[in-house]
Image (cartoon, rainbow, N blue to C red; front, side, top):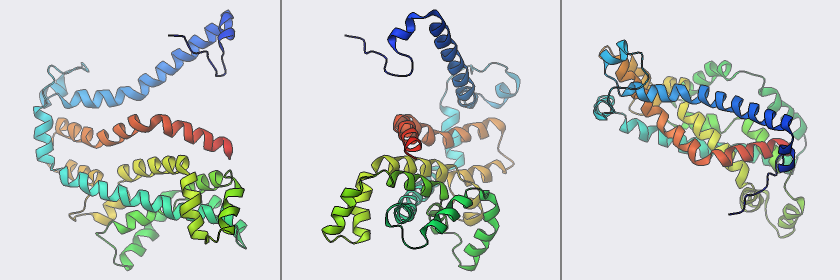
Length: 289
């Protein structure tokens, strides 16, 4: 099988230089060190879950004495997290739909329709990126309580339908779309909404995939807002359930470690499946902007 030539910054003929080979090796070594630092905590948590409390407190080895799945099954039953997985799935699904539709519509208006005063709105969206998200938690929670939307997934969905970062990503991508296709849809009699759903969105699958992955990860790992909105109710997400579980007096350190593993599994699977698409589309979107 013929070896494919390098097409990146460093090409095959560059490798004939000794200095390039040394630099290439240093880069690989640094990347390997960064990978070890990034992956080691995850591996340590998983291995620690196989240990009982005595071994967890006394052993200094990262490897457990045995890889028995019994403790994980026991913690799964004790935690009762199956229903919380379903709640998190509902929360994530609604959040992704709102993140794509609402942020996409605003990005479509600012990048393509450009109504009167769109420049002011665009500047306000950019300005909101400077405001820490935690500052808005108090007024957001007060409005949720006044509207009697507590113990409901709707506030969680809508909060991801108003994300300035997603709007900026959509704007950057929409501005790179061929205007001829959009003009053709207008000539054919499409309304602005029809153009968005039938022309713009199908052409925007790469950025929609990026925003969807960001929204899934953020909605799954979000704790504060679900804790305030769903606290004490039957709709608790996985992160809220883990916090409530950690406050119980019968929970030991090893049991809590295994429960953390359960919360890590979906994001790891998601990133493993879509990491290539995520990194490539994120980089290309940044270059287009």
